[in-house]
Length: 406
Image (cartoon, rainbow, N blue to C red):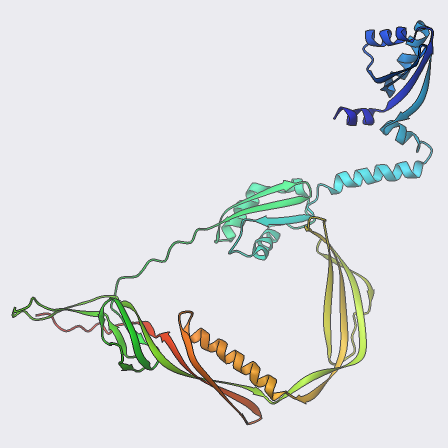
């Protein structure tokens, strides 16, 4: 730090010659003139480094000591600036640059959001923009606490927000609302019914009476676990059965057979590009778009528009509110072409398998799968027939009618 301050103030290397140079050194110590890096060149010559502002005092003290003082070298900020004393344009540009940096550094250039997992960053930035917080806004004018409170009122999934200004970077720290665990609803009368036809392979009733067992054949809508619970009387008693409603729970697995169908036209329309192309370049600065060159009017009936954005960023990866955009329009003519039936069939088969996996859920298993294809009505139709092992239970409200308790 001391070396840096000496460079800012300026340093000079002094060469002192005389019969007794040590007299000058003693006078410097008495006058509290700092010097360092002293080096004896011979009996009557010494060299040391002092601050630039001490030159005039050293000249006076050298006369008292009967010595001569010669400046060998100088370095530091004053010496650097003195080279441009007659370059007024450079000095004016330097002053303007320093003022511009000092002024522009008070504007927000980048906004960084931290702490969000479920809430998208784009949603948070959009809400802040509605409140007047965006790249290019004057940083000291932001009422950060008030803005954070207003943003929280609009974003229900956030429980806390703080805005911290670090020069040209605005840091947005958020905390998301902790989701309340879903509470099981034990009220009402509900049955577990079958959502597909199949053969029962396994039953796990948790609450309610199981109405099926392994090997039973069920149809879609049949009751698997009843919400009407039967309480049998003690053995050898003459008491009748009693009934009470409950929210049936449990899991029922069955072997099912799924048939899914998908189709795609055998002819499609493709684009033949004619070679006509035009581009428009524009500069986006702080959300304002300025056209640089190119034609925006397009006379073609059919064309594709491709936009390429070159975003400016800092070395650390932070994006700046400055980008160069290129919009390219390419003319084309439509042409009808027959599709590759083998490729189309592979595409439909993959879609059907994905649809089947969604139907049987993550716990389900596809045991066998067969595909058949045919062309009908100008379309390629693919049918999937699959044998699956899946959980088929689904909740359904009960009728509310219970046998009468005696």
